[in-house]
Image 1: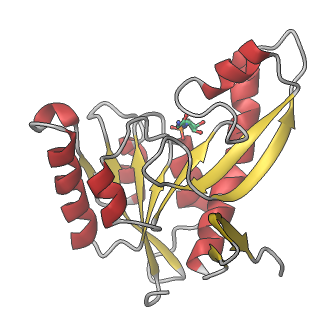
Image 2: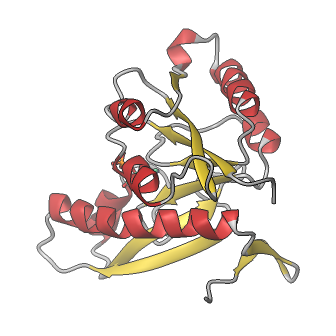
Image 3: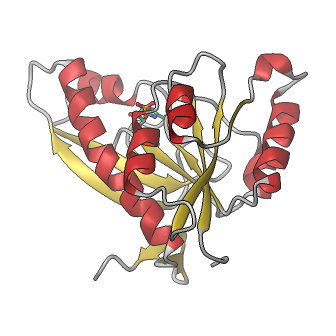
Amino acid sequence: MGATPFRVAVLISGAGTNLQALLDQLHSPGGAIEIVGIAASRADAAGLRRAQAAGVESAVFAIAEHPDRADRDRALGDWLDSLGVELVVLAGFMELLSPEFVARFAGRIVNVHPSLLPAFPGLRAIEQAVEQGVKVTGVTVHFVDEGVDSGAIVLQEALDLSYPARIAEIEERVHGVEHRLLPRAVRLIAAGRVRPDPANPHAVLVDDGD
Ligand code: GAR
């Protein structure tokens, strides 16, 4: 663990309700955890207004403004390093990151995903679950590796589905879970309570007790 505060950056693409949960529940300048930077993949991400309202430094890193994804991700990585970021949180960041970026921040990137991984990775996870008629779905917070939504799972929580299903209603319930689970996972990581499982390279051990 680094010095206090534990320095976190949040990457977004859209509304940023998970960003808001992190700001409301964790952000404490000079305290245990500080959100030191918020980056968006697009200039019209509504969540950028939340960054401004919270007085946190923010920036836009759009692929269209760079020759390619690797170049964009290099610039993003340089910005994160300049802020001394210890953990990068993907909170509704809807783009893949280059393998170079993932290697540069290996073990220091987490993502929140709206399904019980490894079921329904990628885009439209809630719609995929409903299309399959599953009776249980949920939320996963996981480390990011070079695959798509395939890194070690930190926390998961299940949600029952009933049919006929309304996507908007499920999204609302998923958000409710995410807004508790993601801040909890970040708090556990910041406290050094998440560590590699020596018995399983795909797993981490989480000390979730009091
Ligand atoms: C969240 O539900 C998050 O799980 C999902 O995007 C939403 C963003 O909401 N992420 C993915 O699907 C990533 N594959 P927000 O912008 O209001 O936090």
